[in-house]
Length: 520
Image 1 (cartoon, rainbow, N blue to C red):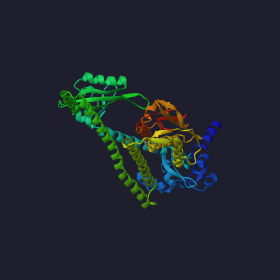
Image 2 (cartoon, rainbow, N blue to C red):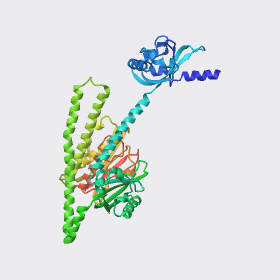
Image 3 (cartoon, helix red, strand yellow):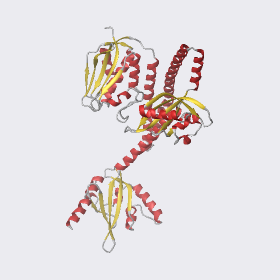
Image 4 (cartoon, rainbow, N blue to C red):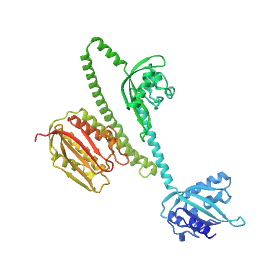
């Protein structure tokens, strides 16, 4: 009996639960340690003074009374009765209401109410057990955000797929189609629903060759320029260039094959004309010219799209700022948060557009080849990053640097991007250490490097570092657009050099690039 009493006492006095006992009228008689911790009151401040209704959001208590009145067809006063109405009638009652602490702060709580009765079954009081439900609310809110991000990503991915000029499809490892785009529907004359679940090989005149193409990509990881002939439902045949690669989930488990089929009809017709006229040289020249035109068009398209996006983005940003100013103090916290989120997103999009424009300009602009004194340029770059380094403990180790030959503005952009990355990815290191120097020569060019003691990266993903929009760290941890390193690679390549990186997780990273040596 003593053990049972001790156990009951330990449970009742647990700091993890708010245990409040009242008399039959609802006046608090017991206020345990958990209630003191959650609500900020000492027991002496509430016992024999107030009812639990005084510890809840009054509007929610009123709403609960109204709901119970409608449910049971009897008027219920919006006070303590609303909290214990069901329990007083022997009905299990667990509900969520907002509790109000002594300091006025609020938190969601799950409350379980039990009526306390004497041996004659007469109610002598009530026991209200409460738990802080804040963590669950935060988890649910985070889940909603993640769900929205997933929906946004799915929409973005579907838009990319549907905007492609090629017929795209995915299959499982058995070669069964799992998804297609509109171009595939046009190529085959079948609807998406009809194609999903059908064998990949059924879309082509030579089923065995099509099946062999799937097996080859599964074995080798990718297939390029694999010729197949697609057959539509109406019998129309189209020669296509089949290019495919395997894709995996985040745990590197094989999920299937991602394939594209490019209509080769016009190219085949062109090749036939060239072969008939035996003008191989003209064909090669024509191909080179066509490729140059395509590259120019792609560059122009990239620049045009990025440039044209700026105007509506400025409108969005400007009108949101005006809306915030016009409604200051009038909107709910949630509405104000939405406007702030739109503003932040427009700023991020502006940075992305700026980076895309920079990336595009690097490919189109003429570059000069003059002497650049790195010993003067590096300190200038570091001064330009003052906003990012202010308040940071950074140890700069700048070696004796040579002169190089190149475009001063572009070389400065390379150094700015690399040093800015070093500053960013050493955030949290005390102190951060950043070293800038040279490491000999490669193919007659100077090898330069920027080294840091930051978060580093896994070398198995090093090949992804310099791709457009490729990121090895979460955007929530480190800001950025995923274009900076791609721009660096393009600049260095236009100077005839190369760029690469070495690193390890949580052990820093070193970025190398080569440039032509200066004249002195």
